[in-house]
Length: 139
Image 1 (cartoon, helix red, strand yellow):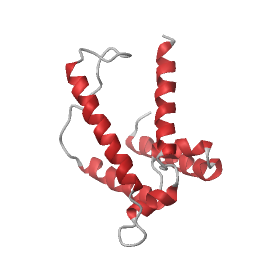
Image 2 (tube, helix red, strand yellow; image 1 turned 90 degrees about the horizontal axis):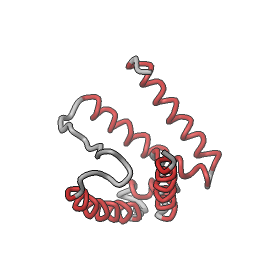
Image 3 (spheres, helix red, strand yellow; image 1 turned 90 degrees about the vertical axis):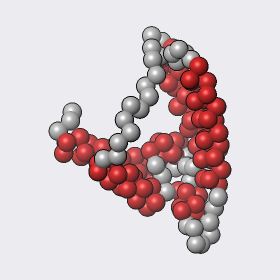
Image 4 (cartoon, helix red, strand yellow; image 1 turned 60 degrees about the horizontal axis):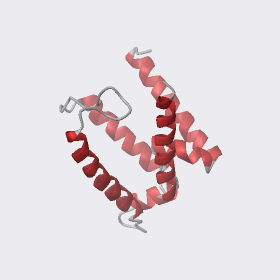
């Protein structure tokens, strides 16, 4: 179906624009948020707060919908247990986020703004994902 790639492109563009406008593609801003005892930058807190508000509204609408507009059904999480892999992966993600000042979404969005430094981050991200798949035996 032609609309699926168009909806994906539009969603990704809006997400990337929001990250860029919110300053989340600037690693210094993210590290400033994590610097609680130095020159703290609260920008990320406002971006996260805005996201929480928007998702609260979205969840209210989702509960009343039979199915999404552009998919056959909702893909909602169905697990609530915490595993060692989840906790370890979350810790590794947080450490990488703190060191690089980027996480995957802003990292890809930053390719348009600071392509060299963002490309190094994205390459490392993809290499890490590949290593995990090889170690776990997934294709």
